Image (spheres, rainbow, N blue to C red):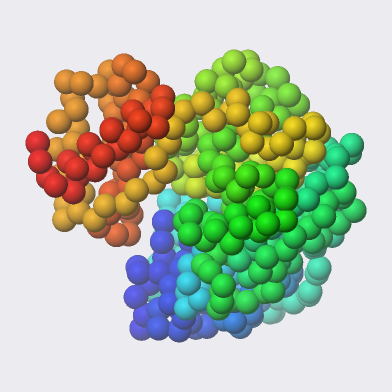
Length: 452
């Protein structure tokens, strides 16, 4: 392979610029290596709306059938639809998407049978090495290819996991960002008492309106405006492959994913008392507090879907949430689903008479900074300096994921290095906005100014 495989085989997936970093030849070889490594006799493939996604998925299928595997082509779909396919059919799967990345990118999210994750430590490195060395030729017959539309079955399964009976009529604004939510939202909402206000439902991998990355506040401004202008009860935003969901309340206010984690955790614990709930290190401490109050068991883990899913498997957790808008469900093969999270929020909102902001008041207990990135020359040295500066003031310091420093007044901050860029990512939480702002600014000054 002439291209730099180490550059595109990331921690959790394959991702790169098409065709300079990632092309049909790599996709074909990766399909062959995927089947070879797993010994798979059948796999399922889906793809997003990017112009390159169809051709790349076809090349991957060609590599897979060349190794003797039968291929199910699910066609256009969200990433959680691919997880549904892998889980319900109990076969490995591959999703062609670059999620929220700009149009010039594409990639592959791969999973084992039952939607079990594949990352660097669970097969992705071996697939990369097989591609690099050349996948041995298969001497038996080629596999077959068949097309299968799974959208109705996907929606039917989601509906078994959330009780939407008795939901009052709701006016719901949805920003699909020209991504796969434009395909899956109408199907998921069909038959519900929902007046849908669609924004950017046209499938367009060039993202002509804004980036399909709702974690960035500027990409939610159109949704906020639409909620206010139409008197909507709620706004929902999905990323490009619709595996993440963000929420806007009836006033146009941004709702923290930590708040949604707490809401869904309560609903899942109502179904299974005493269950375990996973949360990562940057989720609000309101989440473990609420879980304990409800008789559940909170378990803290590192940021990243492979860690969340592994911990869910280890503990038998019923639900897991991340501050990035990923929500994981045991009954959805421990996979993340933005649509399933959205349906939970709609069921909670529509099951009572009050507005969303009032409903969520009890879940948003503290002030969160959101993630703030700082470019640094030496991330490890910066983190050591920050830890030393707060060592005498902190009540607890841990290194589960980066550096987490906690204080007697309940405030804390987490500092994590980026895996791919010279950045430190800061998250701060405190009792109130004033305390949070002071701590946030102080830590940022130390990071960016290098002072003691």
